[in-house]
Image 1 (cartoon, rainbow, N blue to C red):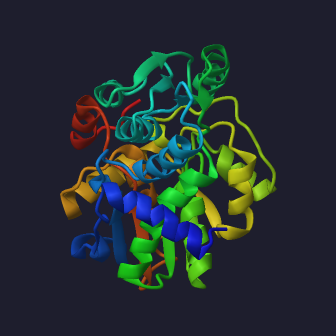
Image 2 (image 1 turned 90 degrees about the vertical axis):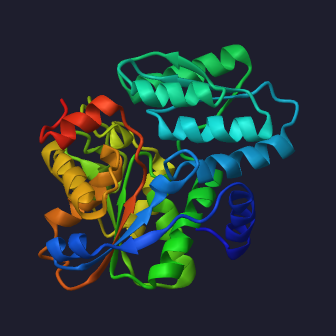
Image 3 (image 1 turned 45 degrees about the vertical axis):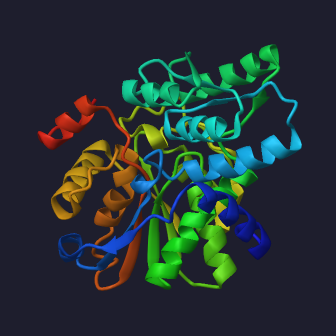
Length: 321
């Protein structure tokens, strides 16, 4: 839950550093889906993804409450790390980021350009996260988890913008990695007293959150091998899941081919090219388009950060492996 006061405090921090992002109902996309489809363009933030909002709110509190700290450390596949690097540069806090082997070259470069030290370790996000915990203890750095109340408060500001502009939508589809975004949307929906269905979107190759939602307890998977790196989670956070159990109507699984198709659909219909996680909400909506026909539906385009080589593959009609 987010109080009105917490939302106002987070908004004050976020809007010192960025403008609200736009949302549009695109005619071609709506026609193809058969519903009035609104997109929230979180690819229009200073880091090209929604996460920057949470990073700013976290860092604002961190700098005020722990000014003596040597810095922070966290793990990421890219957008969380960029948000912390951006906020760390803004507030003068040293940032160390651990990423797994094979991570996006261009996301790594963006984090370094923002002043972060980038360390490559592990085969996937979970191994990078575990290494960041031990390395942080060794170096005396504060660990920033991928799910935290300040991160949720920050990203909830995009949900407030979305509802303010589009009104009480019938449903909103939200990509789900570690869950700050969907929890922020749920919290604002509840704060406003709306009845909007909140629906999560994950990869069928990384189904841990969907399985956990059905089981109503944390379920881990041995792997999360998908090109949709922003949702490649195999061990969900229990606190994040707690907000989804009753707050989310369901978590939809879609395969990688469907995500690549959604990326191409978004480019054709909006001329915005999202990263894979940025398109997965539309892929989930497409899989349920009969169910949503004639309704007013929102999708969160969470970001557009991906390597040029991946974009070229997708636009050529392929699905990256």
